[in-house]
Length: 244
Image 1: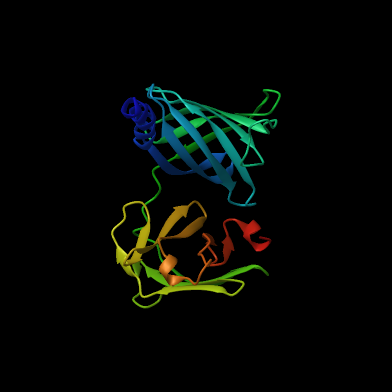
Image 2 (image 1 turned 120 degrees about the horizontal axis):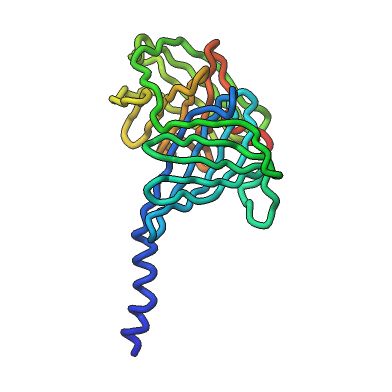
C-alpha cells in the first residue's frame, strides 16, 4: 500500500519536473515606442503555453507586467497587462491580443474598455552587431546602487583589455574585466570561465547584461543590466534598484 502511495505522489512530481519552459527576449515597438519584451513560457499538456513576463519602454523605462496564454499551432496569444507582477485579482491596465508565431509576436494593444490603443510587433531575432563600433565610458545609478562601464569595439571586435565593468550596492562590490570575445549571431558576447557579458542592439540602445558572474562579486553584489545610448551614456534598465 505504501508503495502505491509513493507512486501516486512521485508521478505528478516527475511530470512537473519535465515541463518545458523557456525564456524569450523580443525587441519591437508599441506604435512608435521601442520596447523590450521578456516572456517566460511553460508548455501545457495540450501543446499551448502559459506565459508571463514584462516589457520596458526604452525611452522612459516604464515597466508593465503581463500574463496570459499562447495557443498551440497558430500561436494566438492574449496577455493581460498590469503595473504589478501579481495581476490576479487586480484590474488590468490593458490587454495584448495577437499571434506569436515563428519568432514574431504582433497584434493590437487594447485599453481596459476594449478600445484599440496601438499596434505592436516584436521579434525574437535581434540584429547582428558585427559592424558595431563604439568607445564607451559611463556611469549610472544613484544612492543605493552605482555602476561604471568602459569598453571599445571596432567593427564588432573588442579592443583587448578595454572592457571593465564595476558595480557597488552599499558595501557589496563587483568587478569584471579580462573577458574574451565569443561568437554570437545576434549580439556580442564576452566571457571568462562561466561569467558571460552579452551586448544586444535594441534600436537606439545597446543592452549590457551579465550572467553567472557571482564569483566576481562580494556577497549580495550583482551587475544590474544597463542601456547604452548612441552618445555613449548609460542608464540602469531597472532604475527602481536605486531605492531598494
